[in-house]
Figure 1 (cartoon, rainbow, N blue to C red):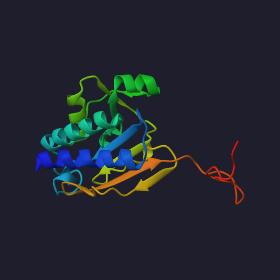
Figure 2: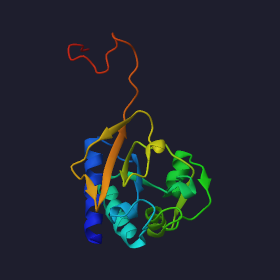
Figure 3: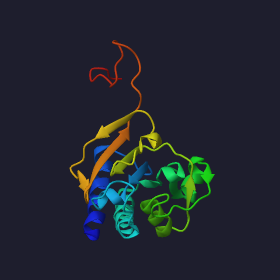
Figure 4: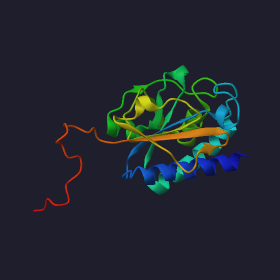
Amino acid sequence: MTVRVGEQANAALCQLVEAAHLSEGALVVIGCSTSEVGGQPIGTASSLELAKELVGGLEEAAAKCRVELAYQCCEHLNRALAVSARQAKDRGLSQVRAFPLPGAGGAVACAAMLFDAERILVESAVADAGMDIGGTLIGMHIRPVATPLRLAQRFVGQAVVTAAFARPKLIGGDRAAHERPKELRW
């Protein structure tokens, strides 16, 4: 099952990047419950083995699609994010000090920190999109306006996948145009 979940996560991330038209360098927050992936209630059966497979698949997809990933910890670490030190510096993110563990911070965030020893935890970020595998509540890290996105890859293991991307706020009233009218030209 573990090889399959990495492939499923990879496919889901690629679908999100394509459907949301994410540009190179876009930040995508990943929330994941390995308990849910394995068919158990969230927070009851954390698995570093599953997490490593998931992170491997996600990192492969991120490299291929040229997006940046931020892995969300669970509520035990206030939903902090594991990001590269370079990302934190470039984006002006506030570092916090902790190390996520399976069952106390999150197996996927732990695996992400093990995958890249240069990763650090930051308090929060404002991501361009996100993928929630197993109902971990990632919305607090997606910039407004978060728009739900249904992917063809609806499950990773036994966990439901929910994706979202941010779109610019629509402003103006009834007379406002939100797209350039085709008849207006220079």
